[in-house]
Image 1 (tube, rainbow, N blue to C red):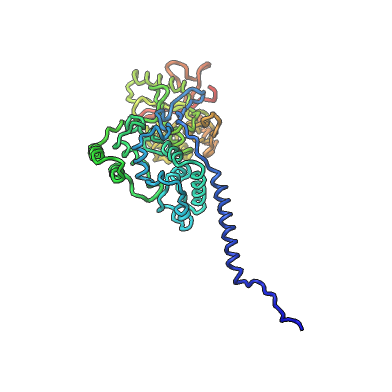
Image 2 (tube, rainbow, N blue to C red):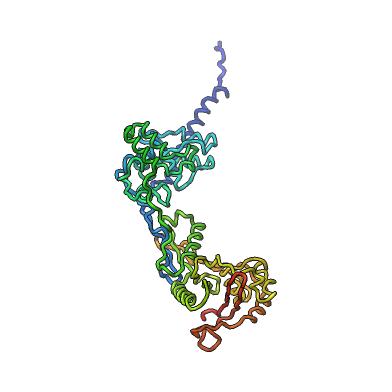
Length: 472
């Protein structure tokens, strides 16, 4: 007689679910760990170094100017910083940063889960990363930041990360890091900062760009330091009074541009070059000397033009003499004025008054009621000399990095091509220019310059515009 049959039973789907959930959770955690490690290893402590001067050269390689010759960034070790400044920064930004070595994973994950990237206070490590990468604006970037924070805090002591942050953080006045900031604001080394100065310098850190915490004034930071028992009551009251009366702040530099040669009227052109470099690469690159440039300016020609213009103002009754010279591709070679205005700011009158022929207005170079500047007058004659080809007026030939390697090379840019028949007819109406020194004129051995002169009695302006053939 056989025994009762035993039905083999498998695991039900309901009983499998907890096990599958556990396996999936383990796999997800493992995958996240690998992802965090891979992303985190893509970052490291940057090798911060002292800033360089941004050197600007003329087209022949002669030094034209220095941009930001002052000290803008000088990394120093944490031990060389005034401890009171470190206290001021920590109490205002991240009071517990050095108090623990634990990585605050939840505070890093919260913006990834919630999608709120602004309202979460940032740690010093996050602020350090954001010096280069900015505040995350997506879950993907928040995950990348969290991964890098975890990697950095596992790899380096927090003191090392704090040192890097304080050596590079912007502190106003084009100063990066505590040493340059101390010198710029107070004219002292960072190790010699007093309590009030430390609070003031810490207040220059732009916290609003990183997290939605209230703006920290020096008074608030000083009060926080007193509440945290970092300063005594006597020190607090004394430095609060100094802050209310106003600290002795060092006068800022008059200009961030230092021409290699003074008296040649280079500043307007250099200001335009500064603005163009800033637009292309960001002002921070200029301040830290990460970019240099070779320009279209001809320093020797600029010197000769300045000498001639200064002589002309002496022997004539003119109140001001201005000169603009472009090359055959509208690149600025020289621009000089004896007065206070830049050549771009000198208006010669509306085009219909300057035009020597109605056909000039028909070219649509400018509207007939538009004011024409010195530079535009030069551009107009360039169009006529180049048979209707209009180029963009350039000031840069090449940019290079700190190693001297080329970053960009700027070639001429054609804006438009005008009617060549009309421009040829207008060119025929130009007259030969002759100068007193007989270097310019229509005779053999002279440089032939064809142009047109005119006056605007209403504005009291007399002008001459002309062009010579290439290599004349």
